[in-house]
Length: 83
Image (tube, rainbow, N blue to C red; front, side, top):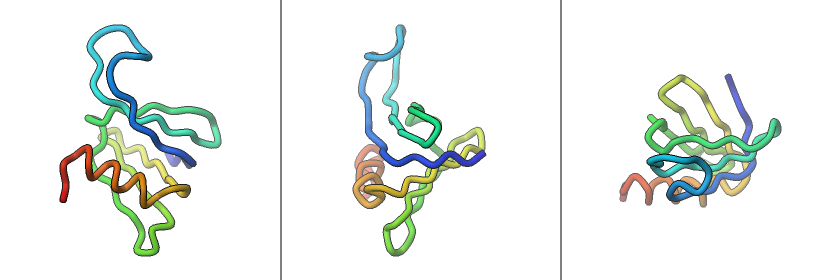
């Protein structure tokens, strides 16, 4: 399954669902808004020209970010404390 997100943002806390929530990312795709648990992300990579960010989740989903890919890559690095 490939979803093509255009925007990715980090949401903190339980503002969208009841119960104990971890951090989520909000992805706007051609199909609509998708939220992914940060804990579900198992890998992400950016192309050399920083035109695309690929986010892989534990259930083998692939999300392709083409807008603000470099900024979102840095956001994920910051979340996962990668230097």
